[in-house]
Length: 178
Image (cartoon, rainbow, N blue to C red; front, side, top):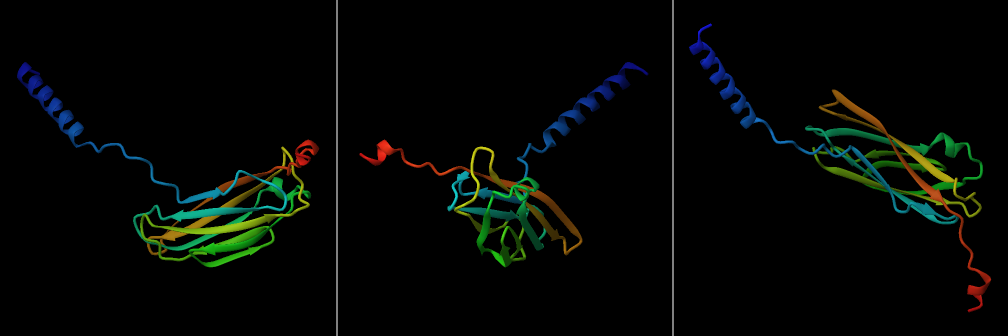
C-alpha cells in the first residue's frame, strides 16, 4: 500500500471518528421506576395507623391500559403471630381497591398516558395488643402487573415496603409528677 492511500485512509478514519463523536447522544438519566411505595412513617406503635402511598407511573411510550397491583405480608410477617394489623381504607385513582384483613388488591384508572401517574393510598391499623420491639416489623410486598402497546406487551415486578413496630414509651414517674 502506498503512503497516499494510507494517509487517505487515516484521514477518513479521523473524520469518521470526529463525526461519530459529534453525533453521539448525551447521557440521560434512567427512567423512573414504574412503582414507588412510601410509608408515612418508618416506625409506629401499637394502636396507631400507617398509610402507604403507592404511585404507578407509565414508563412506556404507549398508553397503559391495564394495571393490577396486590399487596400482602412477607413470609416473616405472616409467621409472627404477635404482629397484628388490619387494612382499614383504600382511596385514590383506582377502579377497584379492595382491602381485607392483611392484604389488598388495586386496579388503577386507565388509560395511563406515557409519563403520567396514578396514586392510591392504603391505610392499615396496628392492633393495640400487637407485639412490638426492636425485631418486630410489619413488612409487606407488592406485586405489580401492567399491559401496554394495545395489550401486546406487559411488565411485572415485586416492590417491598416495611414499617418498624416500636413499643410505646410510658412517661417516667418523675416526669408524671412535674
